[in-house]
Image (cartoon, rainbow, N blue to C red):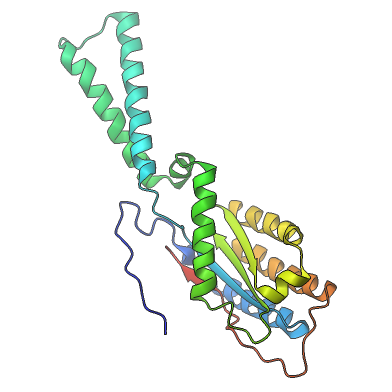
Length: 233
């Protein structure tokens, strides 16, 4: 039995709603594509999508610092060019800096693109990888009889995709062979069409498994749910 974990609250809580990216038609197409792919091979495909792998609270403070420095620089330029102090030097020094920090903080909270830009690619990769490995365990992708589970993990905010195969899959398929599937899925996320892209990715997974002889067995049963698992965080 899975034990629910309590996630800490954040200023960015539930910033990306996964339900907004997948229609009922998408969900049915994903389920059907998974069933069809599993009907031709012994692979068990588990698609998982999360809105974001972390709250990235540090992004707000980076944006606030950037906003403060930008506003202070702008205030200095205005004063240098026109000698403008608003009659009170202390106010001209402090007010733009405080306002710039506040604006940067709020924009980072409201604008996913800015928030993402405030986080290094290495940090994004690290947290997506960690969350994908957790999803592999949470969804029990490892729990198939022949160890033929495959996790297709999409992180919408980070615009990243990870495919993790279980032992039998990794013996048959080289890691680099998933890259085309990953690349096409990332394009689907960036263009706001993750649903159709995921359907195509699942079909490509099935073809790749067929190519490498991961054949369906006479006693094969559907061991894992075919539907898309969705979490905002």
